[in-house]
Length: 283
Image (cartoon, rainbow, N blue to C red; front, side, top):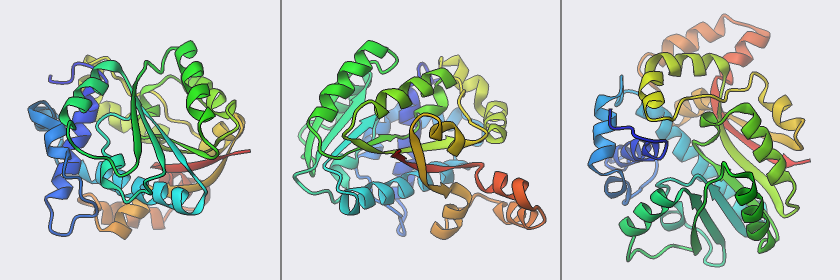
């Protein structure tokens, strides 16, 4: 299996961004995705069960995160973006960001070096800095966040595709570390439900576990979990609802929408929140 470590999942997702970019009706344009994904990225998608059919979820996630990041920059007073486990994200180059914005990409040394080489000669839209760091080291993370938040008046943290690979205790530690920095006001993260985690492990669990990147974190009560750690849920964007709005639903989604109409109360909300993006504000 081409997945050798957690960083290879970034190549996997980059393939989906390249697929969307090639469409005439693309929701976003990432002219760097094909280059960043490389042959390994294409091999990963080719060998994953339903690899191409599940592209819709990552495409919708990318498009919605684009919307939310730009909204916080334009309307939330954000002057600094801290992109944790940035992977092969090229938003600092492809989004219409103000040139005064400070953008930090943080990831493991090998991924940071690979991306720097692939993007050599490309000019970002804003002030950009790539930082090589292991976020699982509490000491490293604390020192890094203190330094980065120190240059910000109002900072936004983005953790796309990160939390699901962490243990619950690691997510709790990260949430407290972010909250300890007063300038960090917003945090945007994608989250999965326990039901979705179970499905993902049945479908792809062996593949990602073989690369030491098992799926782990999926809170039953996202708002309650983060609320207890100092983060108020400002907004939850359901992947199912956004996929319909953006016309990128998976095949057969009409059936699940039909099923949801016959469920009520807690079960219906559970279905709506099976997967999505949460916007958190420090409380």
